[in-house]
Every structure is written in structure tokens, then in C-alpha cells.
Length: 231
Image (cartoon, rainbow, N blue to C red; front, side):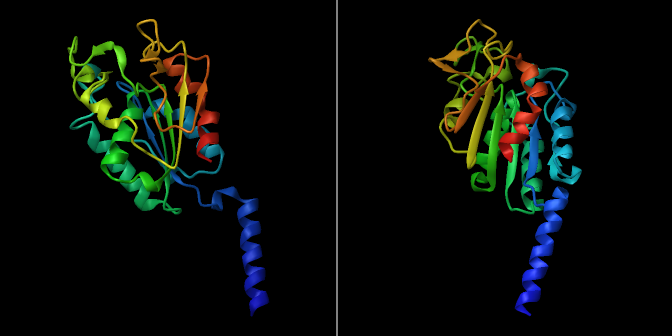
């Protein structure tokens, strides 16, 4: 009987090795940026599918008012779709863990919802691409020159109450940032630095990667690195 159990376990292991799609991958949540849409994740989605993830393992919430992105921030209707996607991904995860990849304002929005849900221990990897984790100088320094909700108290003005609350909080077991020095949004004022640190860096990150792409190219062209980091 013992030998039969061992042989069965060996056969299952060989089947999983031969067919990676049978392996238990963490579910993945992809959170787009302000004024973008789930379609912006097409290269990343295709890479996940190519590496054996099922469509049902990939969650891509749609959030925000795309017609007037200056109205979007981290408070209210923007939160609900991302929160629901995280909850659904965790509940359906075969491993009990999920991985999260965010772009631009999706980085800070995803991080906020993970913390609000107290699900940090259930997030294995978090990848923040071109985020404004330390704020946007184009939004001003709170509370001065803050004209829109995107740049307000719950937005991306430097030292906003929201970003001050988010700073330094753990969001996952492993945290990575992907940044650029030619980012047209994060570095719009001519500098990417906020108090001497690149704004796309995450306070609790394990590693950061710098590539020579613009704000949107960082999302589009790093799909292979993104998936490498969550595996």
C-alpha cells in the first residue's frame, strides 16, 4: 500500500512537470493606471497565459472615470472594483496567495486596498510599475497648489495625507518597483526625485529595476520581467 501511494505521488509529480498548466499558480491581479483600462495589460496577460496561467487566474478590474481622470483619487468609487478583485482572487486562489501588479496610480490604489483589507500576508509578490509612491511634483506639495482630486488629500500631491499614510506600510511578502528616469508623468517637472528618492520606488521594496522606457512603455514592454518577478 505504501509503495502504491509513493508511485501515485510520483506519477502526479511527473504529470505536473509535463503539463505546467496543472501546477498551482498564485492568482494574479492587474491594476491599471489613471485614465487607462484593462486592455493596457494585454502584453502582460498574454505572457501569463503563455506561461501556463488560466484566464480564470487573472483578475483585471476596471476603475475610475476615464473621461475626466483629474477627478480620480484613492477615495470612493475608485476603490470598490480593485477591492473586489483582490477579494475574489484570494478566495479563488489554489495556493491561498495572490500576486499583484500595478501601473501608475494603480500601484498606490492596489497597495491601499491590500492594507485596508488586511490581506498583506496573502500577497506573495507586489510589482509597482511607474508608480508615484512619493507623489508627483506636477501635483504640487500638499496643501499648496492642489487643484484637482487626483492631486488632493487622497491623491498624489507630495506629502498628501494619503501618501503619508501609505508610506512604509508592508504590502506583500516580496515587493518590487520598476521605474524610469525618462518617465513623462512621474518626472514631468524635470526631476523624478522626491526628497532625494525616485518617486516610483516603494519604501518596503526588496529590489528596484530601472529601464529606459517612458511611463506607458514601462507597462507595455516589461511584461516578461513582471511575470519573472511574481514567479
